[in-house]
Amino acid sequence: MDTAHEIILAAGVLCLLATSAGLVSARIGTPLLLAFIGIGILAGEDGIGGIQFDDFRAAYLVGSLALAAILFQGGLNTERCMIEQALWPAVALATAGVAISAGVVGAAVVLLFGVSWPEALLLGAALAPTDAAAVSVLLRVSRIGVPSRVSAALEVESGLNDPMSVFLTVGLVAFLTAPEGMDAGHAALLFGEEMGGGTLIGLASGYALLRLFRWLDVERSVFPVFAVGGALATFGAAQVLGASGFLAVYLAGVIVGNAEHPASQPITRFFGALGWLAQIALFLMLGLLVTPHELPPVIMPALAVSTVLILVARPVGVMACLLPFGWSVRETAFVAWAGLRGAVPIFLTTIPLLAGVKAGRTLFDVVFVAVVVSVAVQGWTAASAVRLLGLEREPPEPPPALPRAGASPPAETTTVTRH
Image (cartoon, rainbow, N blue to C red):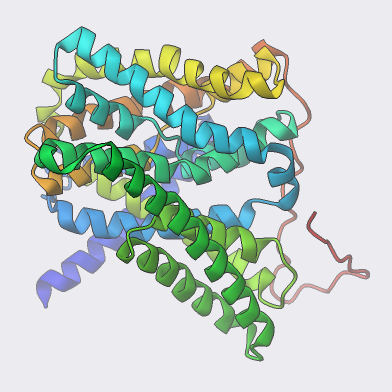
C-alpha cells in the first residue's frame, strides 16, 4: 500500500510541476514540450527524483492511451473548412511525404554511418511523422499567424501521418526479425489493412458515436464518458483487427467534431483538458525512460541525423507533395520548417524494442535526441520563420475567458456554427 501511495504522490507532484513549467515556458517563449520532457528527465534515475523506470511494455500501453486521446481531440479540433482547404495536400504529406522523408534519412544514415539499409530505414521511419501535439501547441498556444491553408495542412497532416509511419516501422521490424516472411505482397497487404481498415473503422465509429449522442437523453456531464469509451474502443478495435487505430480514432474525432449534436460543447471542453493531461503524461513518461549518462555516445550521430531531417529530408518531401498543388515556395518552406517531431517518433521506437531488435535501445536514444533538437530548433524559430518568409498575418483572437462562478449572465447570447 505504501508503494501505491508513493506512486500517487509522485504522479500528482509531477503533474503539478509539469503544468507550472508549461505556464512559465509559455511566458518566456520556450517550447512547452521541452518543459514536459525536462521535468521527466529531472525526475528520472539520473535526476533529483531518482525514479527508475525502464518498462517499455508499460510505456507502450500508456503511450497508446495518451495518443488515442490526443488524436481524438485533434480530430475534434479539425474543422470542415480546414479539410476543404488542405485535404489532398495533407494526405500527400501524410503518405508520400512520410515515405520520402524516411527514405532520405535512411540513405543519409547508410552513407554516414555504414549501417544496414533496414536499420537505417527504420530510423527514418520513426523520425518521419510530424507530431499532432507538437504542431497544435506551435500553432494554437504560440498563436503564430500564418495563412489558413498552411495551418490547415500542418494540422491535418499531423493527424493523418501516424499510420504511414507505423506501417513502415512494423514492416521493417518484421523484416529485421523474420526477413523470410516479409515480401512485396505481404507489405502491400499490410498497407491496405492499415489504411483501408483504419479509414472504415474510423468513419463507422464516428457516425455510430454521433448517432448515440443524438439519441441519448442524459445529463451533459455523461457525454464525455461515452466519448472516452468510444475513442478507446475505436482505437483498440482497429489495432486488434490489424488496422490503424491512430487513423481510426482521428477520423472518428473529425466526424464527431464537425456535426451538430447535444454533446458537442461538453465533449470539446472535456477533451481539451484530457488532451493536455495526455500530453503531460506522455512526455513525462518519455523523459523518465531516458538515461542521460548513456546519451553522450549518440549525441553527435543524432545531431547529424537531425540536420539531415530538418534541412534535407523534410523539405524534399514537402516540396514533392505541395508544389504540384500550386503552393508557393514560401508556403512550402514554412510547412517544411514547422513540421515538428514530438512524442510519436519516440513512441514508435518502443516497437523495435519490444520486438527484440538488437539496435533497439540505440535507436530509442538517437530518436530522443533528434526529437529534442527538432522541438528546440524549429519550435523556437517558427515565429521568426514566418516573418522571414513574409507569411505573417494577424494571429487569431484568443478564446474568451469562461465566466466566473456567480457572475451575471451576458445580456445576449450568440450561437456559433462551425463551418
